[in-house]
Length: 220
Length: 235
Figure 1 (cartoon, chains in turn red, yellow):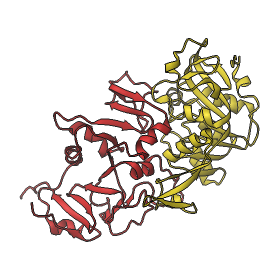
Figure 2: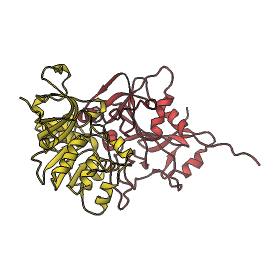
Figure 3: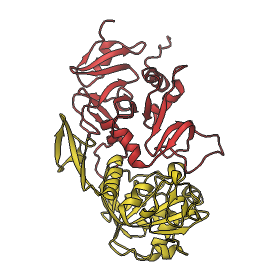
Figure 4: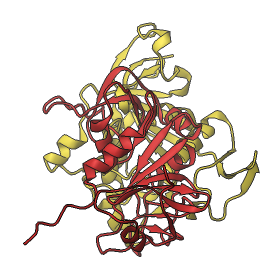
């Protein structure tokens, strides 16, 4: 019996791919989940400045156990630290940074991304669910570049990359690039275009798992 | 002018039924638990409360909501892994919710304090939260009009106050404090430490004293996460 060759990218590899695309010196806001892994994969010699919307620029890693400060937390309400040069500010200033276009890159998770860059990541519109949006709509409206990291399909196998989002939008036409477990895909004026396929993944296979037209990578 | 009061109950005196109350804090950082508990003791009802969240466990803001004193919440993220109080009341139709994106919430509060009745923001354009709101185009991009938010009272936790009302905060506990102080008719502050005017370097004042009306000292404030771990509920 042959051992199947592992296909696609792990969560860490998706984060690593995104980390390599963020320019040196960028101010970055990372969503909860896989995007948080990006901090572990910043290439040697590159420095990113992390913003957390509850009021800290220059966020450092999680503290050592026992060193947590309940008044030093991130937007996910987890204890963090500061790096030299960090600053604290109130919420209106924090969202001035976001809405005013002063943050360079934001990396978020997604429920659905449409071929025109529409993003849905805050609500499945389910009956009885408590609607909660936090800062996601401000981030996608204001940050210069929005990247999405997500599995290519849902747990039940439905495509997350679609013609039109069926879930309520977080923002319209905001996403520029998507990192999935199967490919890196760009949003272009003519729709989804493969930037790079994961090892062992064919274009035909990924096109079948995408809920909208998919263009092959441009020849290098 | 000396704005100090002796007790928490004096500090929250006059918060009437039906009042709109801004409550500082993001999660547990900056949550003025002692002032909220004094408000629970006061029995004021039918309140509209503005906070980013809806409280944790069964203490602080969650306890105020759980005690049936809040008619309406204005917030951005009314979910918490540590509290069922708000979701249960909301599903039962016993509390209203106005969901506002976090940055819009902050800017509406700031505008309220700054005397700006409305502003245009790109946030929510093309989403369900923009429905029914005025949209205008500036330089080829669409923006949604949002009105200011003001309150009758603000409950704020700070680190150091001088007794004239100048405030400093601690790390990310600052969050909504400075903007809520400016947007409320009566701003009530609990401070870990109260000093004499002049002891805070004017260059380091975060909230100037004219925005603050009442100060009460809470030298060793309770910490939400500790109370939740201990299973404490209030009252």
